[in-house]
Picture 1 (tube, rainbow, N blue to C red):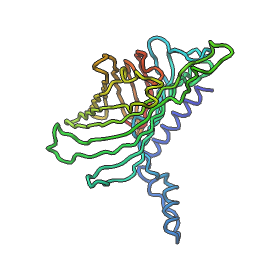
Picture 2 (picture 1 turned 60 degrees about the vertical axis):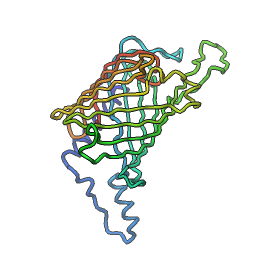
Picture 3 (picture 1 turned 180 degrees about the vertical axis):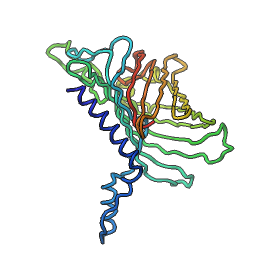
Picture 4 (picture 1 turned 30 degrees about the vertical axis):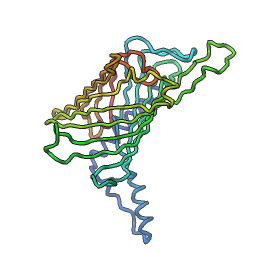
Length: 301
């Protein structure tokens, strides 16, 4: 049954993209009958076209096969995790407005949801789920003579957590059943600078946590492993796209690298492959070194 569900999801997404590709923008031109109430007509039009302004933020994907070296540690004694699982991510942003300071800047709210699904285990539990709401403002750099061909500057505030609790002080009849503190969270601000050189887009991100928050209670050393800086290269050649991301903490020497490859199958559906090696694959494993290969499909880039 679980394999049927994941195949049904893939088929539906690919089939829907195929229909949109054949019809082009026809769905966006659906017109309602004449209505005297102009505002009601506008609302009905948006509802029929599902035009509510949500757009992809990070990569949206479903990866049915994700293999890692070694095994995942289980924080629940009754769960035995395998080193093969499925991985999903949904990430959307909503445009709020522009030009508050007259700099042609744009304001957004965004939300990303990443899940690690032990679909090949007997009970198919979700091993880990990460939630990442954020708000940011993006300033375009319109001058072609900007330093290092800079394209934009982004400044944001964000929170990420895995939604788990801290049971350290909870009394269990059998102490061995106490999962302890599974809560992982981080409140932070970031700035990101984008540069273009021909078919290469480079993103440099600086990140700083807010002190005195849940970061200090759940995972006070998380920045030792995630680091304060990351660089991501996005390279386009023909219809293919390659990415390479590196981040780390120069003081501790911990960090991670990730590379991805995508190729369009049909409109808005891509073959997607990802290799990750390092710390911080997920929040629960922020201080565990993981090397992992994942393959499947993405629905944005």
